[in-house]
Image (cartoon, rainbow, N blue to C red; front, top):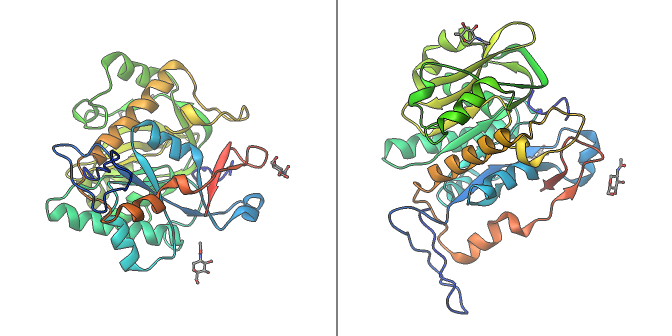
Length: 319
Ligand SMILES: *[C@@H]1O[C@H](CO)[C@@H](O)[C@H](O)[C@H]1NC(C)=O
Ligand SMILES: *[C@@H]1O[C@H](CO)[C@@H](O)[C@H](O)[C@H]1NC(C)=O
Ligand SMILES: *[C@@H]1O[C@H](CO)[C@@H](O)[C@H](O)[C@H]1NC(C)=O
């Protein structure tokens, strides 16, 4: 699933005017114009990439978030709950990437669960903390909400599809800033890249009260075996979003062996969704308590590695 086949703060204003950085970061009103989005690292599954590290984030996801106007913090696995809680209070949203680890037993899934529950609790206390899941991340959100694995075989491997919008799509938050001509293109042109073997069928989704009550289905698609799977969803009352497809590839992955949509409209939708999610992050008031801590947590402390000769990615960060 995910890319497995190919592989599948409003808060923090750093005052830069003086030579010495301010120690305590201030909240800016009304929007957080210095949002920081966490991207959860994932265990390296590919043998060829294991020589570089135990966990990774493809650079396409980092560029995607940066293109929306945010900075990125990689969230490492295997940290204590207290450490994750501290990171949660420092970042303005979380991305769950695609990939191929186990949805229940992996450290990726376990750690995602920690942030998911912290975000639910924050929401109950009136806070805003957006979470976005792509491909495996989408699937993981369905497991976290329903408490069970509802996946079944819905292969759509290396194929780009238009979205089959639901009746809830026109009033969704996710597509609110997508202009009519692009919505039309999204429903007619193959702008969404699919790289998965499993998914949640519309039937399984609608048959699960927890899932159906938590998320609105915004689009579906038909898998190679004819089953209809949910391809886009958003939380009814929570800023949680899931796409079974890969918006980051449209602008940041180029391997000619894969069906990455690169048309002008494909680039537009990828840009708008990146901006949409970062704008969701602007509504979060979390921030690092110390400037030095923020600086050392940012992705800028790491260099991506060239992996185009061993994977579907051009560059990947390893941790
Ligand atoms: C996390 O900890 C477990 C248990 O100690 C270990 O097996 C695993 O390799 C660690 N994973 C990472 C990514 O460090
Ligand atoms: C789109 O969804 C509708 C409603 O579920 C369904 O009847 C139709 O067959 C689907 N079309 C495609 C092309 O997936
Ligand atoms: C891939 O490219 C890197 C950088 O040029 C090189 O170090 C590595 O040996 C290559 N790996 C393979 C399997 O060709």
